[in-house]
Image 1 (cartoon, rainbow, N blue to C red):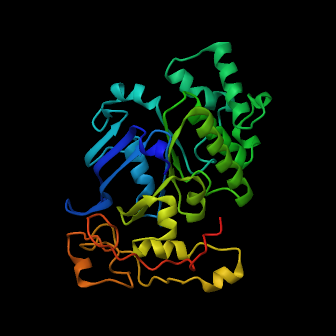
Image 2 (cartoon, one colour):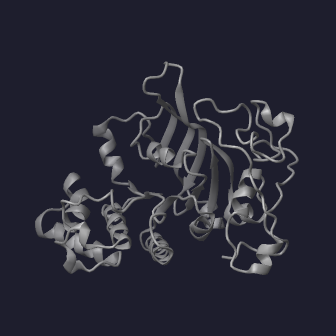
Image 3 (cartoon, rainbow, N blue to C red):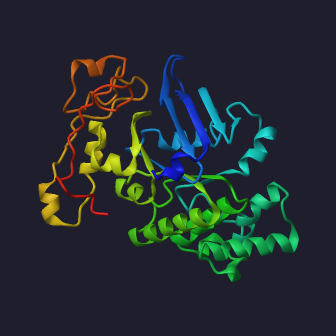
Amino acid sequence: MTADLQSAPVLLEARNVVKEFPIRGGSREQRVQAVTDVSFEIRRGETVGLVGETGCGKSTLARCVTRLHELTSGTIIFDGQDISTLGRGRLRPVRRDLQMIFQDPYSSLNPRRTVGSIIGEPFAIHRVADGRERKRRVQELMEVVGLNPEHYNRFPAAFSGGQRQRIGVARALALRPKLIVCDEPVSALDVSIQAQIINLLKDLQNDFDLTYLFIAHNMAVVEQVSHRVMVMYLGQIAEMAPRDQLYARPRHPYTAALLSAVPIPDPDVSDRRHQIVLTGDIPSPVAPPPGCRFHTRCPRAEPRCRTPRRCSRCSGTRPGTVRPAMSPWPTGSSSGS
């Protein structure tokens, strides 16, 4: 992270966020622990990446941050205001500054509405512009994200997946928000289109002074866009560090395992890389293991990893001497980006 970002004010702060879902037909004690005691902060102008396996709670955390899910407990502070318990009426003005880009560009757009109507919906909801002014703004947004303004009256079915995701980006950008939560915005796209959308998001961040929470399960993609990276496992943050530090010397064995799975185009570098193969299945979020939740699959697990009190050996959450996890990258090499 640059010195400018380190001194930037905090825009979003999550404190001890917990989200549990009741099991339909189960007892009152049976609940899926989707997010457990997660805390982090995002500074203005920063991009924080959030990575982890499918089902680890990334999207649930995103929906908690944007208040699409009600928190079981914890606090979300956005731009100095506690929004954890705000009702729908008081939350509406906050949503102007807190937007989201969804994962699937096919299901996140209403197929019965035109592109102009979809992108212009935020203007209608917040009564910002009407009539010709709304159409003018929508067409400006279409041009900004790389769409033809003349396609204002077309329906989503007339667009490719990459173009549909640009429509979603334009909709999120409509009210000039301060923070955009990107929930795996490129995972459903071809690799060549992924690069275009990532470059678009970078350009928009510079042009409109945006802040991102960027969620993905692809470590290579997150490396391209993030200033800091959070690694999530079974509802908890296993590790959080500046991007270059995390990719060069991961402290948590789970982070090292994820990095060892990233393809490297150079076969000589790839052959020298230490491969980490995890054994066993991911524990159930209904009854997660005590202590470090990764200890059931960790090749370096010790008895203290099973205790509820987290130590600093892996994640660095407490001060003290930290023995870094084995790096999956050969000495002197990078991730190939």
